[in-house]
Image (cartoon, rainbow, N blue to C red):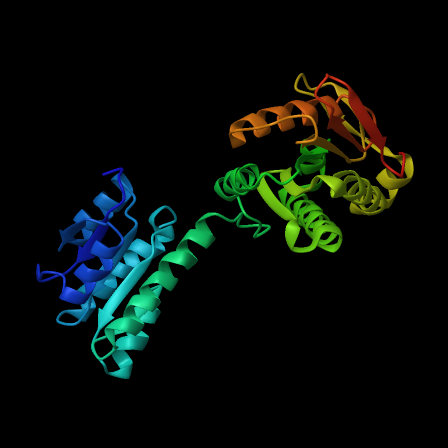
Length: 321
């Protein structure tokens, strides 16, 4: 099943209680009943459900084992799992120990249970839509934010930031050090955008060394300059003293030939609504990618701003290597 749905897992093939049917009906989620762990995992892997509710009231051992299986798998673990339990403390702690995202004791008032159910789904959406390393919003949230800005009609800028020579850095210093650099870049972007645009700024992480920040149009250039200045000040210190003083290191290209690899720089492509109108986030994304690719052809850390008539304004980073 590819469409949104819920699975009710009951080891004794029991029907979902009225409160559960009410939760799911209110959210338009059809219910599939499963009573076997293998069947549950097959369904969850084949068509990821929106939520799984485990009935641990009559046969807690079987239900909690199923919950642990679902949540312990790297693919199905993102599916929110709620457990219906008895009222004794051991039942609740047992469900939490089985990695349940939320526990619903039998005596919980229906209104509170519904609020907790909604909170569980919100947490699950948030966790799926953020990058696990940086905790920044991912692609779905980026697209949603750009769509919201388009709908608002307020002038805005979408800025695509990408590291230069990051793969070579990873190859030389290890993926652990590369991940640390990614977190540094995420922190720079977040702090500068929040510092200069406040709640009007948004920072997202597409993946790898690719980031998007969305800001009021008036702030785009100042923010891009500030980000580049800070990055250029910090980047050399991510290298060994020998590489930092040399300003490069020797790396191998795809043919195994040695060549000089400069220290990392940052390229930012900027798209604004100054002279353009957009109707869909994909239009903005395509143009931002184009501007970022152009920025990467220029030396050093730079930002480039699209001007609609194919004119480009360039800003060079404060530091040169």
